[in-house]
Length: 155
Image (cartoon, rainbow, N blue to C red; front, side):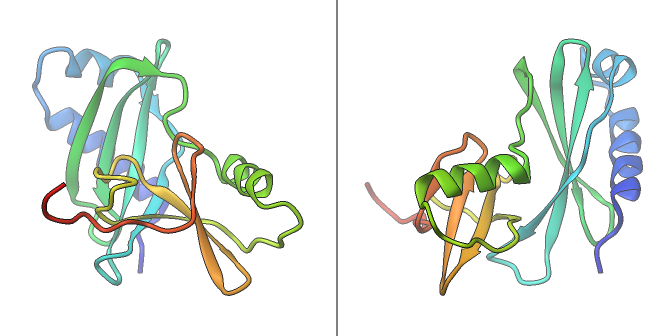
């Protein structure tokens, strides 16, 4: 159902080559793709995307979003300051969950996203971690959430 990581990297490389924005060509030429992260959409069943970080000697400068089914280019985020590691690892997410709730047996985390107060942009997914009959969510900053709050009207 999903394309593989190598296909996602290839799609990200093609997308970067097609962009002609100032500074982007240099970052694309001087950098290389990092480990892609498959993110499943919670609000659109069967839909997902890969986040492909683009790393240079200064850190991660770009994040390319590629459709996980078709490989189509979905978007590009350029960081104002290169990030050392904008994506939390599965191990780090589990460590945060275990620190929040000691003595709990957690299942396998998966990266997910839907528009919510905890993450308003698809470039900032969360890890969904099952336990007992519930879910725990860990965002890319390592903050633990017990539920995702829908975006609503008003304040």
